[in-house]
Image (cartoon, rainbow over all chains, first blue to last red; front, side, top):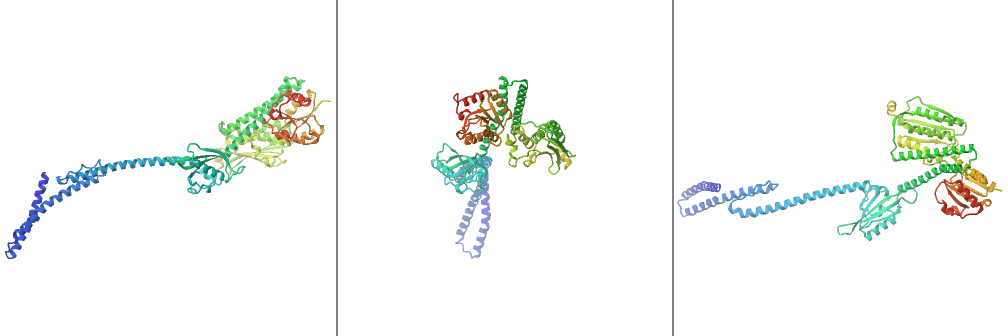
Length: 491
Length: 133
């Protein structure tokens, strides 16, 4: 109140100060105009009116400006919690100010609500983006092909597995008609009919060969399991179709291999078991009529039991290596001394057949990092095969050398035996594979070379192979990466 | 005059034990180590019965059975199959040959002798070779 009074007084003084020169000027004008005083009252009245009006309008203007300034600060406050209290202003502005402040507060409340909604949408957007990225990541790492199409049979999404299976680029096929990437008419019709049926509850699953794609195996295409599912929109109507294709070629191959393995293993186990059972029964029935025959029977039973044991041991060793549960005792192994040891072990068998065993050991470091017992088993198996399949008077040569270029130690076992037909070079390392016509030369489990391959390639990351010509002997070889010390010296 | 039996198997021990059992039972026994040798021997000695393994070099037991059935000289020769394979025989293999029985390994030499007797003498009822394995 005091402030307002001071302001009004100031304005009046200002008005008087402003009006005084005007009055002086008026009086001067009257005197110089020859004393015409008729206009003097009107002149003063006009001057005083103008002064009063000015004295009234100036404080109004100043009060309004001050109030509007505070109002501006109030409105401009970024956060209403930090905003100053609403300006009250002079009494004559209060109704307007009240309405204005109420409007501003209404806007502020709405803004707060919008900001909350915006934050909520931001969170939802973030959650949605994260979920979408997770789903895309899952789709990308899936081995099954996933194709999503819309109600016009246009591609919406194709994952990498589908790209690989169908031979297309997943990023460039979006929006294209499905038949551009899927050439199998039967599958296209199945997708179309499933969408038409619009079953949103159950998927449709069936197995079929997928035609129109590149296929390395047998048949017209890969054998696949198809799962078709309708995707609903918010109105519970079909909005999209998901087609999942699982390539079962490998699965079927594994199943076939497993059956084949069981069948072969069963066959190989039954054969020595037959001998054991038959000879035991013969002994029980007294069919071995003299001491010598009985001893023969016992020897055969013992031999066949050992064969069974070897077979089971080899099968278990291979299974353990394949399953990755074999215990490997890695140490520095000198393949030269290992070869000498194996040669000494098989010397008696070689002598029986008058076979000479030569050793050729390079005068260099022949050390490798590996499991001594396993590597000894490999050398022994290869040397044993060489002696078994080499005729009387033949020759077997064992060579060990190191190769600085490949940083590996090479072992080879050469013989002057029967040789291996070219078509059997790769198959001879398969489980239970034996060259049919060679069976009469020697007994075997059909697992020895497979075990060698597993020990060399799976356990020691080495290589194993065969060079042979039919009737010209064979050269089985394997190489094992050098031990760290030897590799350092070689470098 | 004893019955003449041809035993064909690439497993030496099986060949030995079966021959011994059959000889002890009074049969005349001839042996072969593979299908091809078995076929040649069958044509030469004209046996009354053939006992053969399935998986053998050069010619399998099933191929030998078909060859013998197609050969006029051996067309009516009864054949007993010994197998370590555990699978049932295909009907075509049975229809195209004179397989009268399939015996799974491991087998009992005693039961083989019984089977030989029943086959040669047309005795006891036998199960179908399709069901026997």
